[in-house]
Amino acid sequence: MEGLRQRLVEFAAARRWEPFHTPKNLAAALSVEAGELLEIFQWLTPEQAAAVMSDPERAHRVRDEVADVLAYLVQFCTAVGVDPLEALAAKIERNQHRFPVPEEAVDVNPDVG
Amino acid sequence: MEGLRQRLVEFAAARRWEPFHTPKNLAAALSVEAGELLEIFQWLTPEQAAAVMSDPERAHRVRDEVADVLAYLVQFCTAVGVDPLEALAAKIERNQHRFPVPEEAVDVNPDVG
Amino acid sequence: MEGLRQRLVEFAAARRWEPFHTPKNLAAALSVEAGELLEIFQWLTPEQAAAVMSDPERAHRVRDEVADVLAYLVQFCTAVGVDPLEALAAKIERNQHRFPVPEEAVDVNPDVG
Amino acid sequence: MEGLRQRLVEFAAARRWEPFHTPKNLAAALSVEAGELLEIFQWLTPEQAAAVMSDPERAHRVRDEVADVLAYLVQFCTAVGVDPLEALAAKIERNQHRFPVPEEAVDVNPDVG
Image (cartoon, rainbow over all chains, first blue to last red; front, side, top):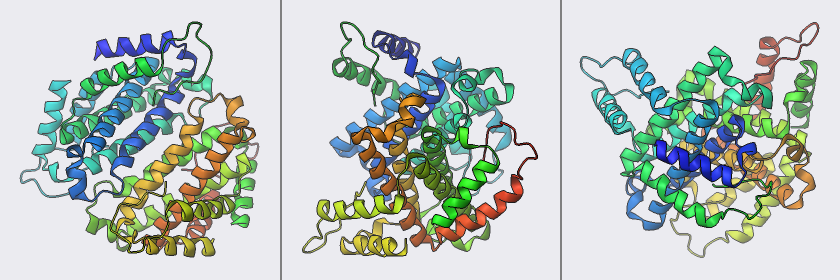
């Protein structure tokens, strides 16, 4: 992760893109890329969606959009000085209290957001 | 990363959330959370956005939404069998060819999407 | 539509919100609200999603988010000087050429995007 | 509006797209298109964003994405039986109570979401 973060920093610096990489712009770009990932699935039936990686062209798009989302997330975190792994670890802790494991787990819709 | 991935898998399993964690639902959830991160910035001036982490309440929201985005990205990748770090490394390689470093870097808008 | 547009203009003016209602901010806000609409559906099964309006609390949220999306779309269009109905009429024309009606319509995934 | 709604219904019916036009899919598509509209602005400076319509290619993309957002919003509303203009009128009423006009309007960030 840290190695990839460094490469993204150098990539942007070499192309003089830092002035564009403000927190607000990167948050927008992250949201746009997450939309592009969702686009792959928007008309797929649950069955087609479950088999998305067995279609080579769709599989490539999925990997490509995953990479874009992660790239902008990492760049956003660099811009605001947040460690995403630390943030996630802290959130999992909080969610363990918010969503205690049910005695007998029931089939309810989740919401960890 | 792998440790956090495991904890997310166990977290969802203990609460019997796996039936909801289809690739399509997780892609939607990822996009929703990216929107919530963007929401923090939507009315901020560039100056306010740059100082977002010096406001404790906003800083907490930023960390919280970063965690949600990363959580759903990791869970999505688990559901489709993609390694996000590998996907990002491959994308950086491709982008190095798509966006060669300019002799004299000019001030143009980037697009690594 | 024009009446509602006028009310939105006056609403923002009375609260001195115009400086914030730049095209870029309004495009971000529109995207955020579309995410909030999607959030209602993210974990629903197709059956639950189809019956969304028979749950009074969900029905209220749906109407509320539809209103937000339309409000920001109208305000965005005002900010950039676009007539959304005209833009849609022109797009339908273009799509009639892009997607001719099949002799025998087949069951393929649509994409009018 | 009603005329355009009818044309969209006929357009989808002629191409047998109705099975794909579930509320959940249309909410996803709406969010994706809102992201595409935002994409136009993501790297633009406030000055460039304000002048977006004086660039013919960008102006065309803006009109195109506005049309897509409105199309999916109208189709979503048809699928769930909501009148978007009525929903917006009701929301404006509610917001007039939530956000009373300040005696002396101050320069605070808005949030009508």
